[in-house]
Length: 87
Image (cartoon, rainbow, N blue to C red):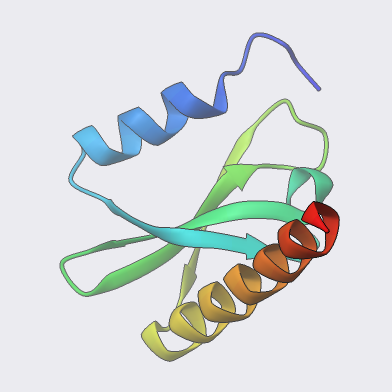
């Protein structure tokens, strides 16, 4: 991964542009480590993150329904992983 790209700064830039962070998306083939974020702005939903190379960003449109479904599924998966490791 390109160490010059700070994912936290990318998130900050998205939010400054009026995008609201909704949550993570896992298993997204186009993204670095198959992980990206979902944002919403004025009823539009996008998947935003670093591409597989880690050198460029990408932004793909997604429907509201699919965005909500994928965030919920990802949060459940992350929670199970975290709780499983805490035992």
